[in-house]
Image (cartoon, rainbow, N blue to C red; front, side, top):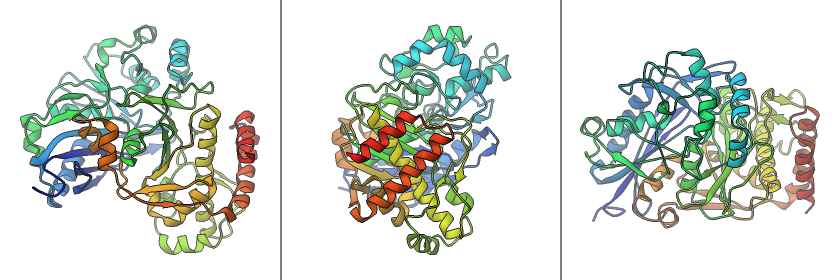
Length: 495
């Protein structure tokens, strides 16, 4: 018997800045991993990628996992996650014919108004009240406006992971309700809202069929087997968004538990028994393969600014210097890109600081602190909606490599936070692939291993409460944060 048992599962994380793959045994043993960078084009509200690079990057990452010792012949199933709301269009041969409009591309402002007018009742039923301009359905309408002959040419919508799944199986595939949520899919009924599509003049034939995440949608074809090294006939399982993938990979699958992902941007995902309805249209809920709901949202705040602002810095030294400055009275709202989506919707939001930093270390400290304050506001917001928040909090994402940031987040939340030994969305996809054989909760319990838990320092509570309240005031003054949310955040702290 080989290490970790005979069966293995391949998870593929198709992210913003790169692709990562893992091969994991049924007991959670890591058998091999690999990664490959991706490039994007950002310009104002525009954020695009060339889809052709996705498959090449995946092949490179799989080769690296194999070189690291993974025996791909053991892989029983593969699942792919993707950035939420990223879409492109493909022709009759399945080839991408437009750039990919990424998860935070904000050009579809006028189309968003049109989509919300046409689907007002449907979006309220789905719990999020209205769509945002970075969501996929407004972007699809934008693409059709800019490529008016798309339908007659036989072009079809493809979510980011649909492109890869089609390559794996060799033909068109259904899409999962997780990646299709922002395209308007009704996750409860597993259907498209055809009256809304008709009102928007979007032919139903342009959209893929729908299945729940975790559904086997095909097998690896001969061509893909030759390119990847996977066995022909390996099961291909419908995936989820990268945020949901990270949640599965964190082991946060029980009702009341939450996974907070601080990667390029901040994504918060929880588990509830019932669908959460948000009158402000900030939080939306994916459907879990287990039947529960996964409410949460994605902020435009995150660790992406670290790479942008401190690319040439010695981060270890900067972290040591920042530790001596925290808490700092310099407040930053560290947006990676213009506009905010969660814990409030403000398309005109821009990054700001309460004053100029005295040193580079102070700017870095304020960035870490500001992101932690936004994370706290996200928790206060979902609590306002009635979602249970008393379960475990698991931190994942690139920011967890910084121990100061991890402790700071525990201090700001005044809650214990746990860190998995191996925290990646790709692991979540390996878990989802394995769930095609067994129940999701039992698979996650067997495959996800927690590394440590950090306790909040009570001595830090009052200073961070004061700074957090000042941040709330600044957000309300700018007209971004509704007063009712700020009031609830203050009252929750008092309790």
